[in-house]
Amino acid sequence: MILCDTGPLIAIINSNDPEHVRCLKAASRLKGPLPTTEACLTEALYMLHRATGWIGQEALWRLVNAGTLQVLAPPSDGPLRANSYMDRFRDLPCDYADATLLVASQDTTIRKVLTLDGHFYAYRLIDGSLLDVVTIDLI
Image (cartoon, rainbow, N blue to C red; front, side, top):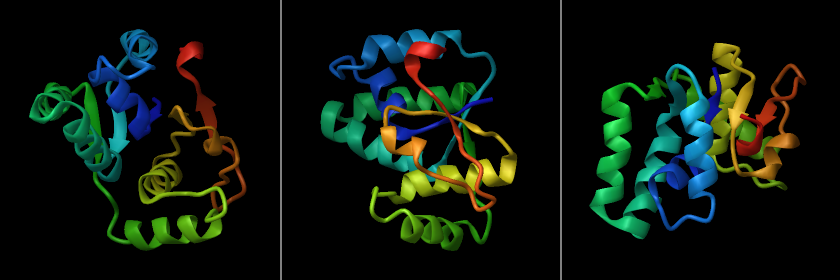
C-alpha cells in the first residue's frame, strides 16, 4: 500500500492541475485502496473548492464513497505526535497534513508515500527510518 499526500489527490480531480494527466495514469496503475489521512482529505477538499468549487469536492467524495480512497482514522494522540513532527521539521517546512502522514506511516508500517513534494525525502520517522517516496512517474 501507498499513503497518498494532498497534491496527488488534487491533481487526480482537477483537470487544470499541471500534474493531472500524470497523477491519473499513476492512480490507474495502483491496486487496492489508496490510504490517506483526514488532514490530507481536508486540505484537498479546501484546495479543490478554491480551484473547482463543489464539483471537485464531490468528485473527491466519490472516491471515498467508492472505497478507492481510504481515510485512515487518526489515533487519539495523533495530533500531538503530528505536532512533534512539525516542530522537528519546521525548517523544511512540515505542515500538519504532512505530519499526519508521518504518524500514519509509523502506526501502519506503510513506508511508501505518493507525493508531489520533495521535502518527503528529508523526513525521518521517530526510529530514524526514511519513507519510500513514490513519484508518479515510478508507479
